[in-house]
Image 1 (cartoon, rainbow, N blue to C red):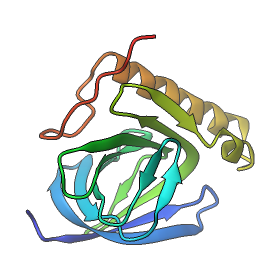
Image 2 (cartoon, rainbow, N blue to C red; image 1 turned 180 degrees about the horizontal axis):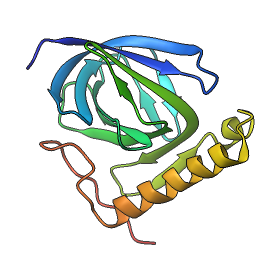
Image 3 (cartoon, rainbow, N blue to C red; image 1 turned 60 degrees about the vertical axis):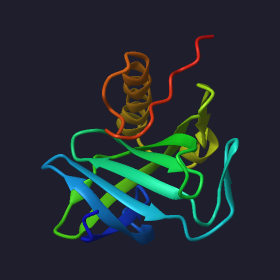
Length: 166
């Protein structure tokens, strides 16, 4: 594993820092960075999943997509807890930093194939203008279409989860 350390800086839409944390760089290209870290806080519930200290997070950030992806494993086991998608602005990469803006909505794909959209109430309270609000919902639509088409948007080498048909 590449031991280069990366700081992830999550911003609110107004540009203020929400929080930052360190991760290890796994792979990078001009438009994508894959990083790894072990969850250090918690437990923290999001939808049906509880993130616990020791869970392994594989994260992918993109400069050309309006979301980022977390593959969350139970501890160091191969057991997937979920794929977690943050709706965001495209990430910005610096030498040792990833900066991204969170637009509240989160989409979780569970191992049983179910999807859950979180934080619609939080989105409503952000005070986005109409074009920003439309961009957020377009990102959700694009992400759902990519998941349905089984486009290669997840991380190579990690388990895939298949959407459950209704």
